[in-house]
Length: 520
Image 1 (cartoon, rainbow, N blue to C red):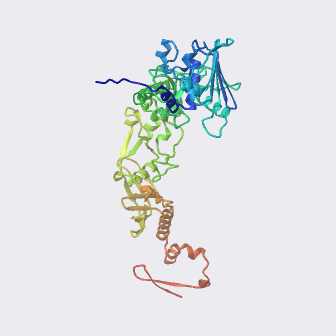
Image 2 (image 1 turned 120 degrees about the vertical axis):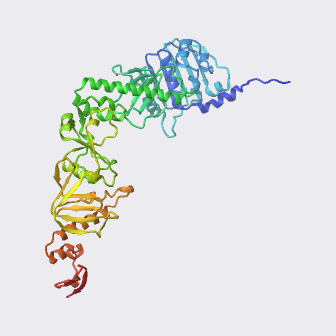
Image 3 (image 1 turned 60 degrees about the horizontal axis):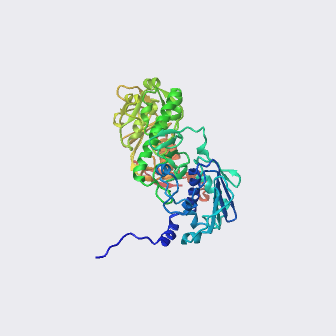
């Protein structure tokens, strides 16, 4: 019988750890070590291919701990609190040719190749100093063609945004905008959250033990989370959380709660009208619509703006958002409506509502408990009644917007709802009939928006507009010569035709009005 047990090829293990680090994580580890050493200041210097980290912390009692895998050298309390693992200085061995360390009254210098091989490194006495200095020679920047000082400066600006210890690079202090003492942070079960109400509540950036970790938000305006120091990160580079599938929902819940608290505070200190104008959309976008329920104002943007989006023009993917607010009493007096019909028939009801100058509600995110929901009345296109004066002209042969629409030119045109006032309009579509008055303008929108099925045929819309204009002109003509004049194509009026110069042409029509002959 034979036995086996776990063995380690130490040299190969150490050599393979090269692939677990990158130069950026090396800089983060050096910053982290200085912070854990209770440093008040960190100075970083880069010149040529040499990088020097120096701090004024408590120093290192035994330099062996720097190159002792999985032994951090920190006290038990800190190891438990921050999950210190003991890979800090080890990460430098793969990105430099020589490592020199001076802490308190001890120092050593050796090539990184010798250290990785496990060769003996001599520790010698040196004049005492405060804190620790780590000197790396033969360092290459992360990106080819970039000089080391430029790369270090860029990385420190990224790493130090929330770092609690002041850092200088080549004599210039590195900006730490998220470490400013006057910033407002909210305590949550997942650490401190800095709320930015201009940003989405689902976009957040995390920092762990002062350093950035995890995903980078896709928007510049976002929330900031300082995770508890004991949050676990994936070793060895600590760029991602260990249990992301569990931690991310917890972080989102904490951010959402902090975001809501910030909105509630705004609501408490602002006038009701100012809160609606400034934060109504924010409440809707962040699932806090219920905060609007007891405020007697609503944004004008919740309703159709008939001046910019007349009947037939409203598109959910391209809305004109009106500014300002509307008081509850105004809405109670003028009425609020919603259209219950399919997209094809919607313009029929819109024409009536526009003529009545009423409010057409268009905000699906409103909370069910909002007072506005109790004011809304619904209308369908079938409920809108049309009353016309004498018919001047009809044509059911035109094919507008790829389907047949009968055109009816009428002397007067009115629309109404049962029990509501009647309004005069210039154009109105009922089913497949488009009613027009003599002064109807661009009404192709009542036939089609020309964007259905993701198509946009501007040429076809112009052609339909020309057909409708010709129909109106013909219908308003009182004699055959005026009818022919209205039907003349554009080319005969504006394009010179040498063969027609000075000619008088006679047109002969049959009993149905169809052209029978052309004579001179």
